[in-house]
Image 1 (cartoon, rainbow, N blue to C red):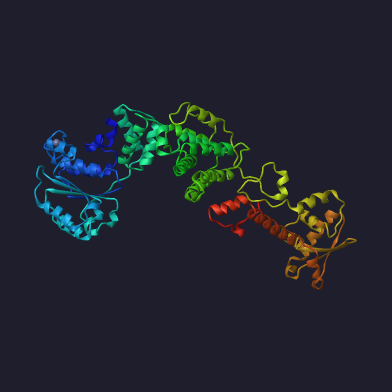
Image 2 (image 1 turned 90 degrees about the vertical axis):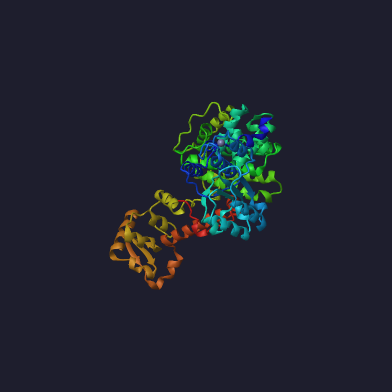
Length: 575
Ligand SMILES: [Zn+2]
């Protein structure tokens, strides 16, 4: 039953077998080979990244009976005892359980004595930040004048809690979390040598769950082998971890793109029946959306496996980068709110439905830079061919700006209004009136004044004069107008002359302009000017836009989801 002890069996015995942490290895190997090794090292890093493993190899390197080197023989008694964890001169201490000053003093009292078997005593003090202040003081004395036969290896997950006096006497290394690929690659290597069947996706999933810790990964691998009765398959690993497989994940995204609410809820039901953990499902969805956004925005960067990359590329052309961002936010908030939901499944479903309500319905061909017809793998270890076939027939969706949710215009629009869109300004009545006017008889009165003025070809100041003049009457060949006193400067011989010429051309007769004086300024309020009418229209159309936004249920949902508010002055009617 060798697979039950993988972590122990495959613990690296040489520096060359250690996965990752190359920066630390290089320093240790150089120091050993040049016989200039610092006397105290501080390894900062999370659990399971190789601190103890490094300490053991170092102890072997220093005490191998063949001599000090970075490549201990592994055969001599010292090497074998270290490997077996019973070498007397490797002293491992867990400070978390040994904080009393007496313990530390007892430990440090022994420091001065020569090693009993080897050349060096190697002290590995784990979670060194947990030592008491007096223990630190005792330790500091030793570090100030270290006996030549002693090496200290301190490990901590929280280096900031260490006194500066200790820190300054150590060579500090920050051990890194292992990369996903480093872990999955190592697992694959082990399984190949153990002759155990596996699926690559399963190892990726185990590595993801291990979150940078090789020890956790190996422990999970042991469990997975037991769970799968000697095989490591995607399905078993997903069942074991309660995670979702890529196949299901792509189904969800495809259903969203296709606006297929039924398929979406069926997926939720299936996940629930399989006992998946919805938090980890949302995590997986977040990870997928992040990869999707990367493929869309930084297409030259290929960091997924080929098959996944191609699937992502294929999907990325069917959904806008903005929508991906929005879906990501919704998933993130869905995860945050999941514990507050009546039950996890309904919380998850609500998150999917929220995504659905923000995903534009497919209608027009998509317009993106990337071609849709990218080749898609014919076989894939992660996604079966059926899924790929389905991905291929997904119709392109449109994410062109959707048509306004304006109630007045809705009858002209086949599609229901889609959030989040901003209503356009209703078709200007003025222009409509102009069109009518062109077929009507050429006359001038209070009701056609605005449209006639709007249709005249005028430039600069004469246009200003026309726009700000109110109509009073048109009798014989005389047009009587009034302009507000504060705008009287617009009226000069030149501008009056040009306006009169344009009006005359329109009416087909020579006309004379008469501007009434201030005494009749009441008339200005009684008869609108084109400028006033335009201002009123702008105001109306802004109000209309504000109303549409404020009454839009989708906007309401956005406000609630993101705890936001609409700043009315930023709402602009579309032209
Ligand atoms: Zn040896």
